[in-house]
Amino acid sequence: MLPMDAKKNADSYSYPNGMLNSGYVGGVLRNPDPANGICYIQQTRNENHMLPIAFDPKKTPLPRNIQEGDLIFAICHASGERKEDQRIVHMKSISFEQPNTMHLDKRFADDLLRKWGSLVHAAAKDSGTPDSIRKLEEQFGRSSDTQARLDSIDWRVLGLNKNATNTVRLAGFIQAKSLEQNRVGPDGKPLNDRLVVLLRQTKDPDKSIAIRWYSKNLRPLAEKLHRGIPISVSGEFRLDVKAIAPPDPDSGIAPVSSIPFIQAKDFPSPVAPGSDLIRVIPSWAAELFERPTQREVEASAPSSDAERQALFAAIQPSAT
Image (cartoon, rainbow, N blue to C red; front, side, top):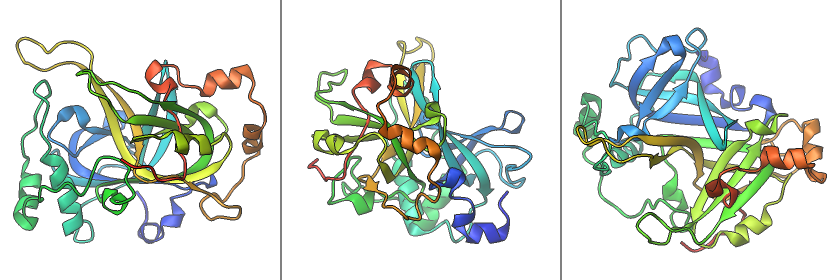
């Protein structure tokens, strides 16, 4: 648990490895498991999208007065892992907080209630509305149904894309990128381009953090982002959920796979020399500008077809 003076000074916990790495996730506490150091923060009625949050039960215990179904906030660090043929992101809490008047403002309520109001897929488990969400509705009213906060990159709505319930800010060095274009959904309809970037903050390239951009025509952005460039970006912690089998005939619920990742909510910004976003230049950063060996290429490149074509973004806005 962070001491009070540390909570007032974000610099004291936002720079592991000397680079900006700070996440904030708020929502409904689900399935707390201190023995295994894991809990979930739910932001939508769809239980497939509950966000896994790891924690050390000795150093960062859950507040005793917060129970299953209550609102909770977690200050987190993000890290990456290569697991078989996938790149996944882990969020580990360095502090849990009980909601107070500083957190529970109109902006937070609107963002959380808007997420909770999303329709649930017919083959997914619907949590309904817990008391904590119902009380939030009574206090602030239902979130208005607006198209202003689009789930895409568009310079006209970037300010509205900032989510008061789920924000991750990162800075580091580009390890690899992949761009996937001409994507088609299961229904045959065209999908936005997907750009995936591996952002490296540690000596081990397998711990690079997977960041995704979704928009139309991401090629100009991808072409400007090169291996070794230091960048900063803001995004949200999300799950890429896909059904892996037909729904169960009895329950109607389909089994799914889920891949945690960071979805960028703005364009990456270059980090200038001497910037406060990267305070330590590690020795391994110079290696990124050298020609990668075959082993390094294999270690950093995505393995699945979906990721192979999808990994970087640039600094030029594109129409959505």
